[in-house]
Length: 453
Image (cartoon, rainbow, N blue to C red):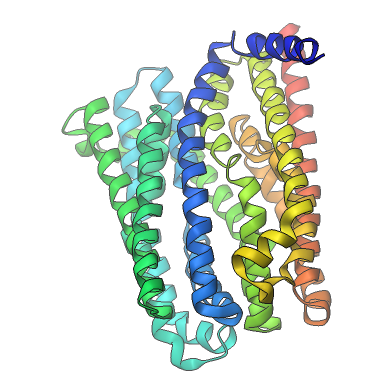
């Protein structure tokens, strides 16, 4: 019986691995998956120690402080990793090193300016964050303190994109694990010494700075290896014919990222603003546990996007469809199984690892898993459209859903709290992912038809 089941599975896997693209995708995903798995375990341990040390309310407050910085940084960000991958990928196919170097130089300079702007906004808005999110004006310095990580990440997005396009996933993976190890080391010491919020914040900052500085150094070395020691002297004017296209792409991704601040990236802040730190703590734990099923899938967009960009540049639409189809099958089956485990055992995990005080997080966890299943299965929904030259479509979808979700937040969260927020996030994932996936399918059919005529 088992042998009869094993043979079709073995044949299916063997068929998949015949593709060079899929083998490269699996190899690159494997580096990130291993690192993500290790980081997930370390992050879970960090979360358990932090939650037990701080208590529910302060655990929620910590999440608000960290997300406050993240949201402002994303607001100023142009998602330079995506721009670097798309355009250096194109120029690399054409063996045009000068333009590739110019793209990386322009992206790095733009990201530096955006990071400085983000830190300035954090410094100015920190008093408002303390009053309206933490409900305590005396905590302003904590909001400003965590904002230091933005300066450490001056060109982290551009650096990550460069390392991805040249398949340096192993190096990216190592920096991710180092970040988690450094943070866990200092959090463990804080837990043993029974420290407080400030020590926890410094622990997270230390880990993030190690990762950001490491990525920047690795990318600089990779640029030297690919384009020579003087690559940074390439004049930006060589990009003049492409300037409008580059600006359009960067602005589109920035608008999309800004809309995501409403749709999915500011969840804790809404609960903090309309409710209490206690509910924020429950919701933060629910999000943390739901993110565990997303962590193994989260490397796939990073590994898949360069492959899609290469195949789209070559107009190999059959290969593009094949990558998307196989990716959805693998991600969907994994998510279905892991969600079942969390639904059945989530209550016990919360009770025994985090403590009975955190049990109200369980209903929100179940609601979130519904949306995360859609997001994981079609993890490529946005990057596929970027590769196909349609960065505007996800932006339009996000704009429409942002308006609806904001209305839902204003009407429902003040009354029903974090459970309403969980339902709104799950609904956003289902509709946004579905619309983007359908559009991708439509475009690929059109391109395949044109190619066959």
